[in-house]
Amino acid sequence: MRKTLVAGLLLLGFCSLPCLAAPPPDTGEENGTGAPITVQAPTSLKVNVRGQKLYLRAYTTTLGDEFLVAADDPELYKIASLFGGKLSWDGDSLTLSCLHKGINRTLRVDENKVQGPSSVPGAQEAELALPAQILEDKAYIPLSAMEDFLDTRLTVRPNQVVFIEPLLRNVRFEGSAHSPKLILETTAPVTCKTFTLKNPDRFVIDIPGVVIDTPSLTVQHPDLGSIRLGQFELGPAITRVVVPKPRDAQIRAESSGNREVLSWQMQLSRPIEVATPAAAMEIQDVRMETTEKGHRLILTANEPIHFDWQRLGGPRPRWLMDVNHASFKPLKQEFEVNGKFPGTIRLSQNQPAPNPVFRVVVDLDAAVEVNTSAGQNERQLVIDILDKEIDPSLGLQKGHGSTQPVAAAGTSTVGGTIVIDPGHGGSDCGALNRGLNLSEASVTLDICRRLQAILKNQGWNVIMTRTTDVDVSYANSSAREELGARCKVANDAKADLFVSVHCNASVNASSNGTSIHYYKQSDYVLASQLQSSVINSTGRNNRGLQANRFYVLAHTQMPAVLVETAFLTNSTEGSLLNDPNYRQKIAEGLAQGLRQYAARQSWGTANK
Image (cartoon, rainbow, N blue to C red; front, side, top):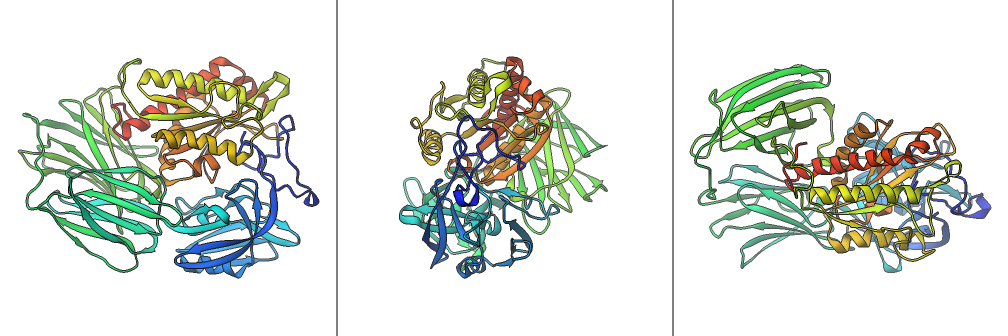
């Protein structure tokens, strides 16, 4: 359990929870800092928003970068308007609403979840560090709610200076190898500056006032190579995109001024030469089936299938897969889809010899979830097109895959660096099951040790935030210091992934199940991959994916998730967590999901 964040003004009846206290009330998902958060003194925040300086009445909290701001402060409404949003306060229901880009989200006093319409993908509830509440007869909300209301990111600098800035949401290429178009999408209109660097030649795009969800990302282009994204500065932010530039390339900006979509047309004098194998593989058989969850395309070739895939934006989103050096003798084939989201699935010989490319395009009325896996053997690829709409901005935009089987245990197949964070420890024992004399800190450490052993055998470079029952920072440190120390381990190591493992708790003894929490855009893909593998391994109730601004998710510079494995306070799940065999199942489920995630990132050759 990540201890409940408590707004601890005694006059309002809130108090801190000591280590041996009973678990807090169940409010859906627990919140998570490792120590209670208390409200402190009133202050005035200096907030920088799109070139303007505003001042907000606020209360500080012990989390350090979270503040409670007055729900009726006119400056708060001005912040929303600067991002094209409109706030409204309902005094009867004590609810603050924000209408932004056609989506209405709400936050009610005494609740810590921003609610969005369930019908809109990616707009469902997001959990905050502490609830909106009444302080001295006035309603206050967590300032971080503006991130969810407006699709922005908060950066808190020293002396309580805050920057609220839009996000770089998508980076992609469209067009041919000879004439690729680079497209950047942000969550609010921005301007940029471009220039070139030499040795080697690079085209650089700096976007002031924009934050990347996950710094140090790399986008792969099949011809140009690695496109690097980096957070050049924070507070105020500068995002930098670096594109390899062949000396004969011509680059022309297609847009200027303040825009949410920035694009550059690149013209190469000749396609970049890519070495090709002597013989091309053949797509020998194609079958289309209808399933309970949607449609299934089954491809059979004369050898293992290695493929690249990507999502394309625009008015009609598409999912596209290419198999390089592959021939398709029918040249073209098309299937009509008449399910929940109608459209077509097109197969074609997109590029002829001597560099043949076989292409599959899923072109439906909505962006839907598409999963790939090996079929009955390594020469068969299964593509499941599900009747499940997704938010394209929350998923991977590009990926790789292979039908070759996973290498045997003990073989180095991954090579990524992962930081595993056993929740709690030292002066913070976490949740307790007194009947079993079991603490969360001991359970999470055992699970993580087991996970560490499996991942090392898979070839991961594994770093643990703690290997014994100790604080990561120092004994009795504040929540911010302890959580900051855990994030620092991952950020200093420049890790590829961060996984924090916890047990849940509730005063409701019937509360049960597994939940996985994410915050950044890049966290979502990792969380969704781990969700299915852990649930399949343990068989517990699936409490779903939850978007939460937990400290260790918001302050790590890589994809990160927080896993609530099961409820320590539930009699059945408490007994399971006390069983070493069950803890091994949790570790194996996490390891399988991580291996599958790595395969999608082309770190290894495992199947999805």
